[in-house]
Image 1: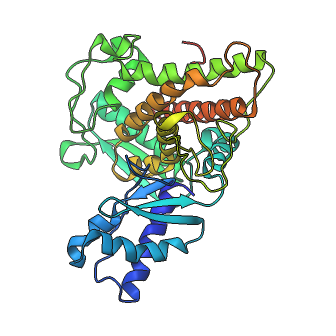
Image 2 (image 1 turned 90 degrees about the vertical axis):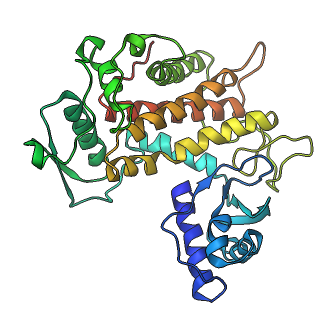
Image 3 (image 1 turned 30 degrees about the vertical axis):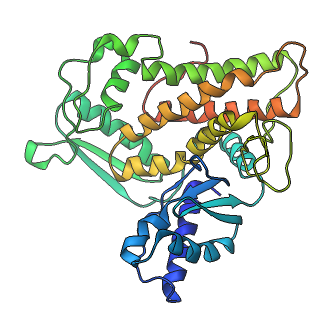
Length: 354
């Protein structure tokens, strides 16, 4: 179950509570689902009870207890616990992270593509300005992943319906990739920076981090092949816990059934998994809000989470490749797939060597 699907499950629980008279609130349009914060547990957490407490006229924990019963019986949910003032912490059925990684590897660059907008035509009327044209092109690419057809045309000022703040100067000297990133990464209402910073190969450059993270995942694939093993989704540390709880020593888990080396490492893995799972929602939101910058910023999030974990993918010293190494490699390849697919939708190259 992805965060988007879980969000819908949470909203259905709210709706059931309202229908049976346990809550007197309007069902919100969206339920925020994230990885658990400090003190949390399970695979995902939601603050929906805190959000509904005031309109319900009840303490957040009371609202959480009402929703807990409805969520606990939802398909795909094995445990719901309440922490803090009323956060609902949800443990999913089965090895959800393994299923996510396998899905990404199976679908490849088409991961996140749907037919949700099949039959819809998105008409973009843009001014004669390079940033507007680049934003429209990226939107057309992303909209196609959702099944929509896009028509782009230049128009007079009064007919324009896509008008991002124009670039302060010609970005073409940056080269095609850096120029597109400079125009697409800022939100449409923010003026882009057309500077050589976009060409610098260091951590301060978000484009470099995204492309470098992708290149590193490809290098790991080659290195693993030299060591005689390949990717296989599974537990990233090879240790199984049937109850899905945290270890007494503070170790965490990635999918509710496995742990990794300590709470910090576990949190890092969970952040990467959450970012990968959120990719389909990001694509849909980029179309809905006409903001390819949402995808660009999402790729930075995926890249940063990936780079934090790549050093632990390959065996060290005399260590032999294990199931855990194959699972880590699969997770890295899934991240690389999302990065490559996202860059392609922005019209930017994702080199295997950097």
